[in-house]
Image (cartoon, rainbow, N blue to C red; front, side, top):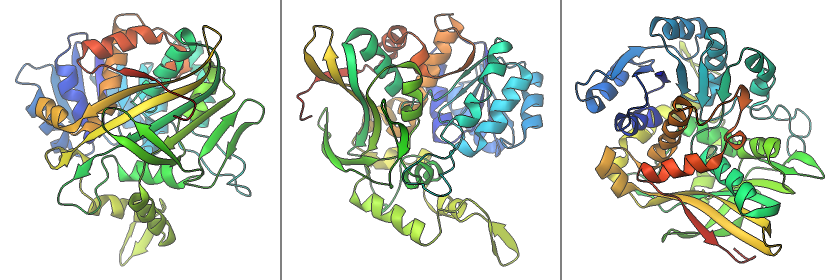
Length: 407
């Protein structure tokens, strides 16, 4: 297995130390628009062993990606850049006939007339429209394989297979008590992606209604997160699990809510009011620049926050329904990462490290033939047990809590 990692931001960088401890691959090429950033990843984590190398790539240039794949004899590609680059990388992998993996699906487009009632183009629609081509060529595109989406979807499949006879709801809940010293506002993940998923109409799935949308930040609820994180107000956010889980698993409802916090929500609302969330370039003097890119440029790089951050982050899937014994059951399957431990071990912060951990595990399962498939598939399409076993082997075990109906 020869892996190409496209993007050396927080997740791409965090992928390196985790992969460096494993031996299931032959070589990993780290590529970025800024070749110096890719080179720093190699110098920091390869240790002179020659298992990693660095190069430059423009993630928006499909032909350039194809050329790089062929020149480096790549067999598997990880898309670790913003979701606006999903389609050129996805299509390049199809053309080059290699396995594709990403952390987020292709972008959605709100319904032009009723954005807070009906979905327009959903997350991943552009990719699933090409699934037959991937399947006919015997190729795999494993989409949404970070932590959420990714591990949260693995939890859903595990619960469906082993804990429940019928599922009323898969409710993915994401929250943290992380604090960044020295900054009034410093997101732990790409602000470009955060704006996209938080300000788009959130999507919900119900068996008797299908997919529908709501206004951003709808239906707040207080959810209590484990391992000392505690109660956090969570709100609806557009997220991939809601479009992935119903494709493979039966449930009456699928939701995603994120513990953003009041201050974070107000900042996002202000950016929207000022038009600073726009993706289309505007002219400023003699140059054109997208307002959202300006916001990203003035905020701290999430990859640099590890030594300034404290606290824990949690991703999990709450499952409600009828247990295998025929009784009502409510279970929260979760994964917690402590930033201090994470930074001490690998020198990266918890949010991006937790995301990067899961594609490494997925690549190992593919390398060993434990996971196999063709077409455009989500993590729900595969046996969850080997994945969860490797999670423990990697030294980052998952947890499970029995809960009452009140959560």
